[in-house]
Image (cartoon, rainbow, N blue to C red; front, side, top):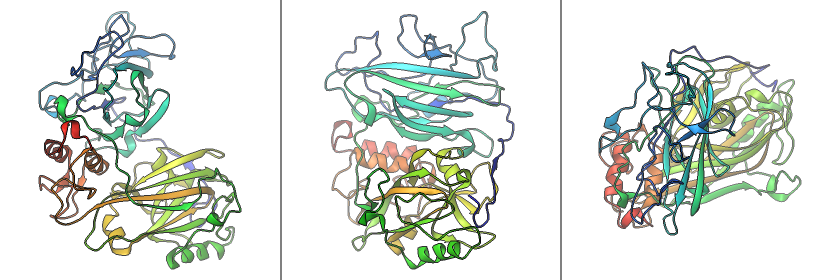
Length: 463
């Protein structure tokens, strides 16, 4: 990507830290099972981190993914410890890591990368939602039954004191009745301390309050989901005046090209579009996200960016941009296809285009609900080595007078509303009337999840 203010790219390493390889996963009131356990109806087993068992039950660890041994716990770490107050019952997991001996491990004993698995046996009729709150130092990939659930990089989720911030991941779409394999591949690239942690994180351990399915709101689809087949009518995207102005800047810049349609391989050429939607009068947005399927096709893809409504484009400096680096947790690679997930409740933003070097965390995490509510459209410009197959905007909203906790406006408080709060977890509320802030403390937190779950109309927050 040669473009306006990004002539070339190199990735710089994260600052060296004195601890690493923390993984925190939290599951709510959690399903049934384990391969060596004959789970009885109504008996719920929390997937707490801890020492595995020689019969293959519990957490197992491996270096190569072939030879498995019981995970070692409690694993020593002098700086980062699990907090039992996170769980209302005082129950918490032990630190764990891979250790085959001999003797006792130190906090930084090898290996620096390890794999973990938990075999979860779900009996007929026992399938419920499983939410995990995830953190790691430095990185992890979570899979269920071979399906990737999500990736995590600590550099994107750190408190000012360098301790990790958890993010929610929903394992439910990959689960099925019978035996399920939950896998975590964790890596520590800095090599100081390491451990792994899995805890219910106080979503409430009551078996009657297991979460449920996700709600899909109204959509705006640009493109046609045809695996990059060009020349279709749907590939000519609608464009606002703002989008066209950004495309004109590229067209008039030496070394750049004019904007191209969807499903056209972009090489120093931007792809622009506008999602238009109409909300009913009085509607209050409670969640919004974009799913976009892209392929990296240009000569310098590693520092590609996305402009939106509040972005400006100019030769030299662009402002308020989203980097693919931040969305993917690392530099995009030429020839790769990605399904980008833009959570508009927690969008990572760079104040200015990072130019030749993309490193470190974004400058801020922003919520676009107020902007979407006021403008009723979303501009997106992918620049400038990114081919786009489709982009889909999904919005949920509620209306004044709906029951407290009914965040999707369907007249009920259920699992869909829990999911909506999770997408905005640990962010400021949007004023005193934000319907997600059920405890009115000015933030969207796990306390709001707890309060909502307590008010669900059906057992297990069923829809």
